[in-house]
Length: 149
Image (cartoon, rainbow, N blue to C red; front, side, top):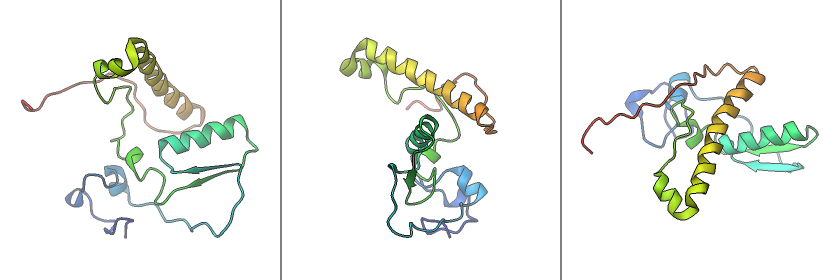
């Protein structure tokens, strides 16, 4: 049974927006790991194993390998929004450039766009250097309107 009460065999017919990704529904739920057995000492504790938490742990450990890092996650790595992105990696803004510029200025938007494009290249570089076969293809973006709305 899945963390949200469904069987592991249900796929598209039981899709609920906000649930886990298609990939987890298709491949099956990861095995649950045991709960923390009690008190634990760590140098850094990261709550949440989404992309932000995982990247933070990765870079902390890379910079200081002797750090004792503990990640706490209620469900499993990639359960939340980080696992529902459809498998794409993009530097697209989640809003209009004009809206961002109105609060952070033109230079702020330019810096944000550069950082986002750099993040795409960083992910590609890390997968290569760590030997992760993520089947990444760096390509373009196609915007399509399917209806008048």
